[in-house]
Length: 282
Ligand code: SF4
Image (tube, rainbow, N blue to C red; front, top):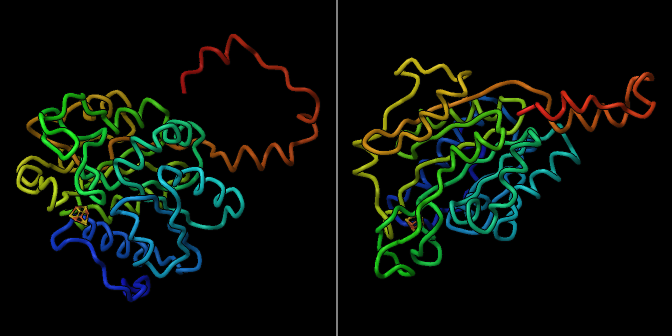
């Protein structure tokens, strides 16, 4: 298997230089190195420039409605847990229209991967503000500059209990490929926010190239949750990319499997120790 295995043959229509090309290549390389057969993979995409990735991949694909990537991906995985389900969303799709689904997918720990193409604008509709647009940026919908504080997707994922939290940069293709491979191999919900410049409406290449650094080169321990929170808040002069945090714990599929076929002792009504249940943080 190589990257051509996953090439649908359709020529991408993204603007020349768009960060989506880097994500597409990193994804194909990751699947090839994991030796995943196209029929074992489902790519689910939402609405936005990122959504075209489902046209360019020769795997199972589902291009769904705005903001509903995660419910679709969840249903597909529960219906057939053997499939490798990879959800793609844009920053508008994931953090505006589909925002309600992200924390719940994270806390359920379903075994899917979410790759957010975060270009900080609505590119497909010609450059309006999104929840990750920095303050002060003038867009078509914010002619006096953006007044709204951007959300921090990594903090949100960590606080929601995601068991794999990472950030990539679309211009660092091999680094992103490794993150995607690790996310797909992780048992549980893998959240990957990818800094993806939109060359047409918000070109961030120069500033990102100057500021990003790789976490693994700084000796970061991805099992350290407190350090992951601290790093997620570091978004000024230096921008870390890599795996911020990961841990192993039972998935939603494990819980369903157990509930449908419990050991005899658990078939009686379950008694819950409330003092323990209420102190459990994650
Ligand atoms: Fe890429 Fe922006 Fe063009 Fe969309 S509008 S294809 S995000 S460069």
